[in-house]
Amino acid sequence: MSISNFAKKHDFEGTILAKDNVNGPKTRTLFRYLKNASGVGNIGWNFDGKFLVDKSGSVFHVQDIKDLEQMIKELL
Picture 1 (cartoon, rainbow, N blue to C red):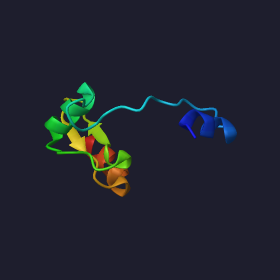
Picture 2 (picture 1 turned 45 degrees about the vertical axis):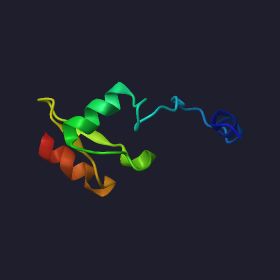
Picture 3 (picture 1 turned 120 degrees about the vertical axis):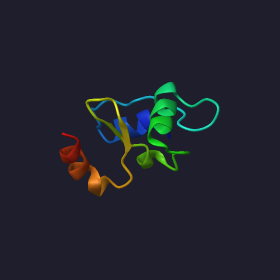
Picture 4 (picture 1 turned 90 degrees about the vertical axis):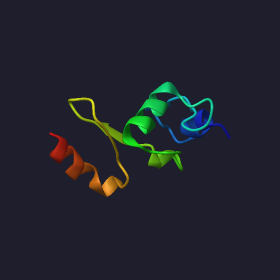
């Protein structure tokens, strides 16, 4: 079953984004930049690819979603 069919079946009304490459030779340009800027190698799975960018443009990899709120407070 495709993602869009699954979403329709469950009455999802949000935006469905396109699937894209975050590793390998076809890595999306944005993810290549974020990984290089933060020192991250390959993104292991889809929920591992979270990054914060501060107002000066520094990139930080969010390793644990539990740390996200504190990281945002520190960067503000």
